[in-house]
Length: 473
Image 1 (cartoon, one colour):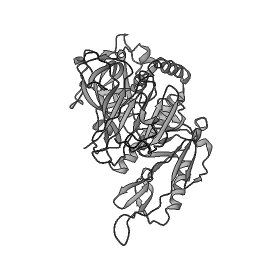
Image 2: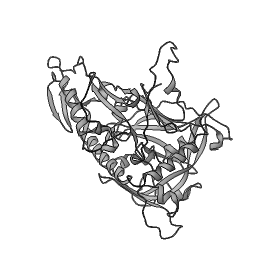
Image 3: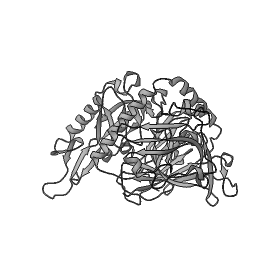
Image 4: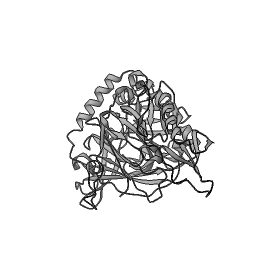
């Protein structure tokens, strides 16, 4: 199974935040390699997305209790990182591959550093890697006993008892390592123990590239695991909003924010993309460096709600959806967490999922404007069309796709390219690439609808910024 390579950059604000591994020289940015595993069968991907939606719903029900205390912890965490506001990042390009509909990051942990390929997931709060403590770890696996910086976390600690999702209640002695058990609706699972570790980061700046250590990461060591995403990767890099996630730990040191730009999910091998921690110059730039007079679109901005009841997911406030300039009749409750709805932005879900009232309105409006095309049947989609010209046998290239727009709070408007919601499903066949979710229930903006946009998650100021981008350099 092939993979797509992207680039992940981490901005570094000061050398004091790291144990620098090459002479203690300060540098201005740090990078990981981010990999995009490509496109498997749409039916399989849709099934995995439905399982993930069920898991998201289960997590939200679980987190409904104790939200105020966790919200206080997050507030303190964000404030702690405010001193490191002067950071920036430089994105770097890389190759592209094929596989399942996830984005993956190359990550090095431990001392000496051990390399892994992790799922980059905004819906996860625990970073974990496969460990070589069982027969299941036949391939690449983390060896904690070989790392000088691995330190187990006690089962009696606040991190285990209050912060770690799915931690086990068993704690025979204070010296026993904290254990966790993640169970997913599709049968996927990850079980293991938790410790603190250091990540090795490649720094780049005006001087020659160097390496540094990002210390104090909460890391899970999974000795048992199963599931399709885990078959293709070595674990998960947590980008969720949580006091133990990699995103929160890194962002607290890099100006309280991170951003990513996802290339087209069908992009060629030489496509590039990036994920940046710290202020990203591309978010605020309005002119092309190669052509200063060529204006670039300004980033649009909307509140990043960060409702404690939705942790670790990033929830946003949607006001409406329009198709071809016509606002659709969708009950406001669909977008309201208090009314049983709500919307999250999720890198781990490929196909966008809309709660039933929104789904019905959107697909009906799109189908109405595609009525001239012959309908065909193709699982898992409800609306698919023959895009082949009967006279030439080639794809029709003059179809005027209706413009879909998602209207956020604060007048921000997402206008994805047509290929992000009317997607290629087979040669000569395109489908409306949205799935129906239950109502009441959460809606999810998946990574295909996010593609070719730069997204900045400003945790410190609780703002989400986005702008159209080819995600290449």
